[in-house]
Length: 167
Image (cartoon, rainbow, N blue to C red; front, side, top):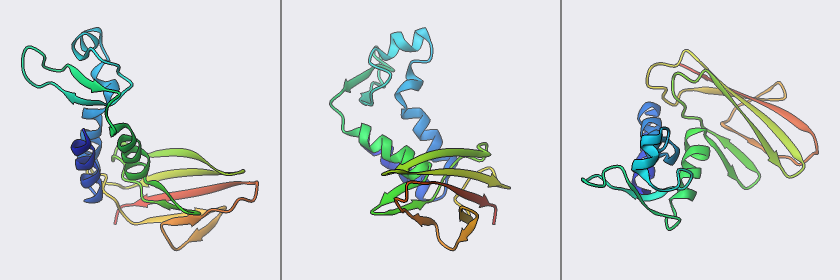
């Protein structure tokens, strides 16, 4: 499972959002149990990363080695840091979303100590790949010239607007 997660991260690093999200959906445990038949086949918890999923008969589709895998932490990092593109580095929040073309927008409410940052990400004119493209970052109406923000614990709420535009 680690390798599949790292492959999704690699697709995102290449700017191929479609493949990164496709692979993420493929390994997401909840997607193995969306029907009664899926539950009967998968046979393990649909909320835990399985270390493996069998590919040979008679156990094709069955999950194995749940609760033993360190992949849960990697899956979290894949989704939050790589795909949604929100990564904490000290007192700085780096923003580098890699979202599918069919996602016009998403929001994250990020608490930093006693301060809340409301992050709104929108896409304008993104092509089919949904690749990483030029973006603008605005904090409380003031445009920043970088792909991140310095976090301040001032006990207030801040609006961060990220706009991804096709080049």
